[in-house]
Image (tube, rainbow, N blue to C red; front, side, top):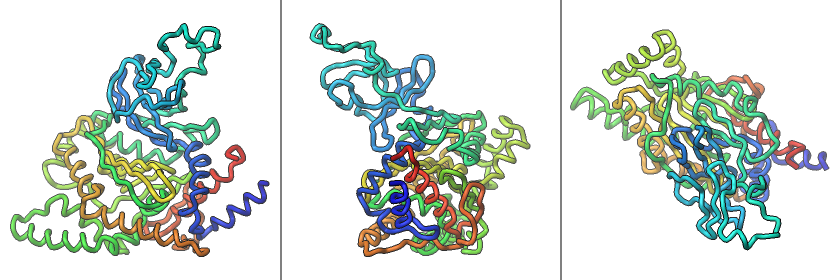
Amino acid sequence: MRNREARSLDDLVRPDAVNARVYSDPALFRTEMHNIFTRSWNYVGHASQVPAAGDFFHTQVARRAVIMMRLDDGDIRVLRNRCGHRGARIVTARNGHCNVLRCPYHGWTYHPDGRLKSIPLPDGYADTGLDVNDPGQRLPALRIANYRGFVFARLSRTGPAFEDWLGDARRALDNMVDRAPDGELEVAGGCLRAIQRNNWKVYLENLHDGMHPAVVHQSSIAASQAQQRRALAETGEVPLPVQIVQGNAQSLRELGALEVSCYAHGHSDMRGFREPRSNDTVFADYQAALEAGQGTDNATATLDLNIHNANFYPNFSVHPSFMQVRVLFPLAVNRTLIEHWTLRLKGAPDAFNRRNIVYANTVHSPSSLIKPDDLEMYRRVQDGVTEGGGLWISNHRRGDGEAGDGAHSSALSEQFIRNQYGAWRDYMDAPDAR
């Protein structure tokens, strides 16, 4: 059986190409949800989203609804959002506060840690074997890990240990927290949401791709160049949104100089091609606050690490320099929900934190000048791979090196995609996933 399954994977993933079925086959998608998303660590949310005891945040892990809750002792739990009686969803609001979790169907209530608290008319269950103190009656709790405020969860009992899964890719999360003068981050406001008409892997394969910006984003680049000329003529200053869009106008030579690092379990990060530093008073005030909180040497080292984005396979991506967080939710083989959040640096001037909101609206909003270009290309890729016909998708570019933990390449290489498919095969072929 194992040999047949291995041969089947060989028919789908080669060292330098993948079969179009991995993006379009509904049966494979269902297997991915079980073998990859239930066994891997999924980003759930930030601890700041549940600041006080009784606060909750409602989201999903591997297409299962879950509730992240803050307990009285300060701990965080991630519970399945499903009543043990008839299976009804207990929480429907995105976030809120409650002292108990009460099912809206028959009124069963649960403690915030998931223990069953009470049931209506308990006499009706006399001699039935139902025991409210039975651990089996609680809301199932997921395994969780809280890394410097970033909360991850795993559904399956099997899979990599969190420390092993995170590995050296943690440097991007460390850099984000270290950029806060007070050493803490918090979610700033709500999120941008977009349902993309593509397989979840299409999105991840674009995030370190330096070959596409000058082609895909040429219309917004041209518009920003015209706006830059007008702004310089009128005021002598270029607005921040224009500067951000201009980042996509980097030459292939410049993008080829950006280092991309690969890590175990499919993770990767890429050095930044937009300069988060500036010579204005807003950045100067922020740097002064950071140096006061960390010391000059530590602040310099923190700011010197300019990571454009980091991918934590399979559902999480961050942009440390501008405090951006992106969470991926596969909905169907050809539908993916992306949520985009911005984090606030505690202790930083408000004007500096507002810059990160400007970045989010300029780059990640579905109605921005940039994002619709990407969404259109993702859709075109999905349309193409859905045609089938034995199509193979090339991952050959700069394929002369290994694509494992510690491998380095550039933004013009597809090494990081090959690294993702190495993790894909490991998850899909794991004996305990069968």
